[in-house]
Image (cartoon, rainbow, N blue to C red; front, side, top):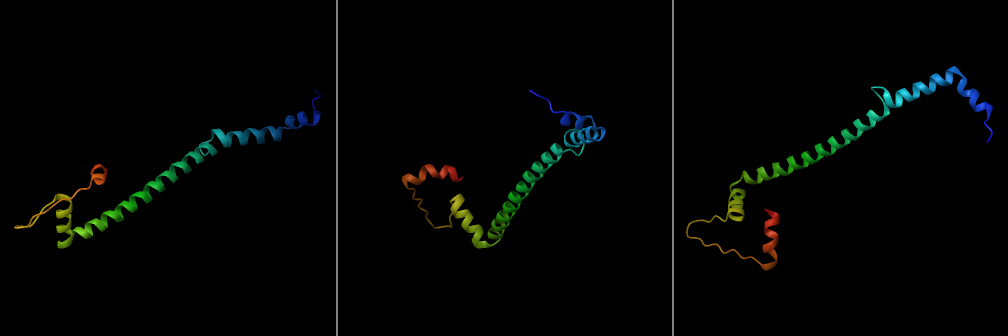
Length: 107
């Protein structure tokens, strides 16, 4: 195997050695290195996704609060979730066999 002298002479040049050293330093060891930027970008993307999730949850909660602020909405919640009733009123709860197992998943 023959070693090409042109390639060896390029690495003997002081400017090439300094440039390669600087590039390695900036990519891996510096405080603003490529690796740190990549890690920070991935963390930022995760936080943006989390922010979007919480914004959707806030909108959903605001709709729920708005529904409960009316008398009809409050009565509907009391009847459906807590099985409350008015005086002189009877409530019959009908459960189907296929919905009994799924009811625990929704609560």
